[in-house]
Image (tube, rainbow, N blue to C red; front, side, top):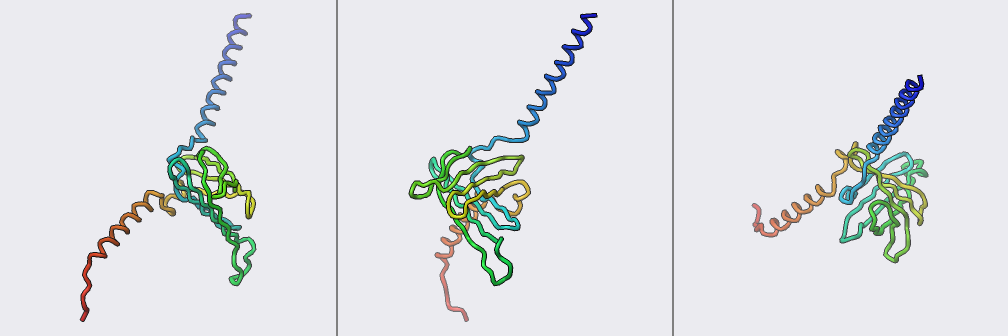
Amino acid sequence: MKTRTLIESIKSRAFYLMLCVTMAVAFSACSEEVLEEDIVGKYYNNNDDGLTDIIISKSGSLFNFTCEYIDNSNVDSSEDTPEYYKWSGTFSNYQGDNILNNNGDIIGDISFRKAGSEITVKFTAKTQRKGTYTASKGGDYAEYIPSRSIDLQDSLSIKSDTIKSDTIKTGKLE
């Protein structure tokens, strides 16, 4: 009789252990690790209060950061103009860091989250219009916003077109 309760106890504990392991694996799969090469690009968010555009590029060991926010919350008619805010700076740790302006002052904090093919950046401003601004790239936004690599290729083709146009001889049209 004691052997039977001991076996049932072991079975129930093994079941709970397997359940905990399964839940831990499921939770870790929901939040993917953001890699350094993933964060470069243009992020976008448009909601009722405003429009957020964040651009991140890499220069050496630093990341360049620009956030533009257009505040539409006080615009009631076509005669009203929205307020415009812009933050620019650099940061070095892509897993979360302070953003520093040209003077070395902290203008805000940045963090990233990845879910599937979508990456979301969260910028908490400490100057100008204080608050938290989020924007995303990839996922549902992938077809609307070109990635940085596409922009770079476009710039290169435009540059080569410009060079070609310099060699075209112009003549008098009749």
